[in-house]
Length: 459
Image 1 (tube, rainbow, N blue to C red):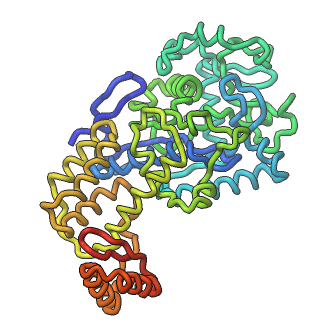
Image 2: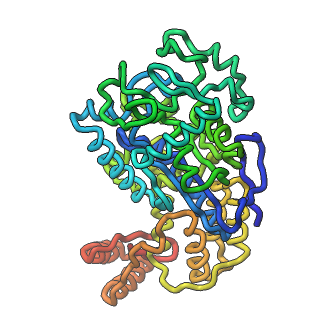
């Protein structure tokens, strides 16, 4: 089937085909490892995972690169003000910047394992790729797209005739939108110019992470990191680049400018962006006490995989409002699927008509809500055998990523089978005292007992 994706660059749905089939090159903006991974991050990386799994389902070999930002990302993204986020985290917790980066990289990995996100093919760290960033900056300086000041090396946006095409913002609008009080370098030619390299002077004089460069000691700007690492592993033109919608006007606009001016080639063919996640209708922040992490989900005895189900209920291009009620509901749906998985061992044949409908939904701009609808239709289809349902569900779970194949199977002992038969007979005879006693006996054996129209069901 042909996959259509919404391309932010064209603002339209386009049929996707890679440059060098069957390989798809995919770059994902990774985490800045200075604080805990929250549910907003989870949405983005689960989205990347579902896209990647869909491409695999369609027969592609996905070369997936996701970076770890461990230097150079400032707190004031848009105007490059404030301090380095890694240094801010180090001060907050009384650790070195290297310890902070390592600690929160581990925490990010643990969260991704909990929500069953496949690890990228390659996961480069910014601090391991400084030579590539310096080389790219040198090329931009040589070509006249960058200039040096006493404080930094900047990309000159006025030299790029295509600057602003991704965000559809005019350069004049971006310049007038920048206040004078946030332009901290008096030698900066244009307010929208962005740093390729920060020198270790002024407010960054004590920056803990620094390297030697043609412009003196310093550290790279955030934007150049992604361009350098993406092109190092995927080449000058990439099939798919993903990120949050908040990255469109600055980070991704700047990535395109510096990459295409350096190489003279299109940097990314398909831009895939995820909309915002809010919490109870509000922006997530620690000050509002609605900044939730994997620990908060565990504390409420909710399976983290329920987050995958919750994310899939809404288009990746629409805002997602997180509530605990919604996550609890998703957890209930997950448990229903896990109950089905627990009681089925015999594997039949995956039903082509169902799997085709599932795949068609995903090929429609990763329509996960529609794909999930085919799952529930499958389970309610009385014309299919339970074995065929199970085989079909396993096929779907290659993309859903709910680990249904790993669910422990329910072992019903002969003693339990005998007690169930006796209890069903007692219920039919309306002997509720005996029915209750037999329930208690089953529960003492470690089973959860449920009454259904078809009789006693245990888990």
